[in-house]
Image: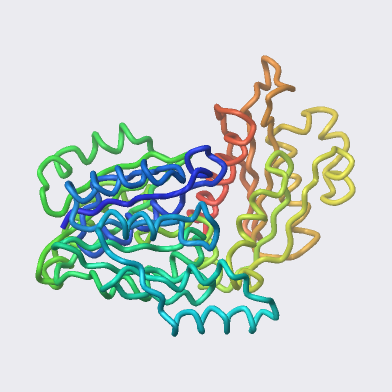
Length: 406
């Protein structure tokens, strides 16, 4: 079954709104065996939208629309779809009552134009919106399926997963495994796995470079779920044999989640003292629910004075070697270890740029210090990119070193 995702809204075309809906819907459709071959975005214009619908009906089996289901005049998706298909719009009194109840619950008065949302094309069915006033719509027409979903991502995701997916799911299994790697470039990774990638039709294997890491997507398909699992596991084992040391997750987890789980499993506590990353490591770590079980504290010691006062870095060390040095990175980590008594400390100091670099210490020079009760060590990095890129790459490398040492 071929699918097309159609995003309706001038704000999407202008770039005022990031179109995350298309990304989400495409992933979910792929998981249930529907091949999405087309993404289309269109402004709030009835004639252009009608053209898009007619093109979609000629090349796809299922059209998924997002946006344009609101109560205002420029919300026209339902109306244009109905007109294009030749279906009359009918008022659904039960839905009208549901919308009124929603406003009553919010202690708000329902505007007259909200009644527009209670109309549906003849022969279609509503999809419940548990978070807003715009119901979705499911239409079967001349062997085609059209699904109209609201634009707000939270409303769309819940409606799509809970009410739309059960209506279109096929008796065909597609399983996707994401192998996350770090410390190896995409070209080298592809060279190592070239014979496996080229020799496979099912599962298929593809690499995707991201900042500081590379993901490997393995997709297996079939009618027999057990056989699909076997195909998937066989390929994963082959990949693991070749690049095991670079793999940090097989379940599309972030590297900080992997570190959190390892700390928790080993009943360890950690703390960070950051300079060039400015709290980015702590921020990403505290984004994990339950991280308080393993996380003691995060300190941003940006100035030399703060390194001395908060971490016990010697002024003589700063004077002799400078803040961006192996010696300072080590003293930052050991100083916080002595202060807190936790199991492991990670420090960062470096030059994120764009200014401040010298011939001896260029922008992108970063030191990561790690201290435990068993000793300390420092990793030197020479990174490229803009300020944010250097900070992000340092953060990924920091978590990777923690992953390995834990």
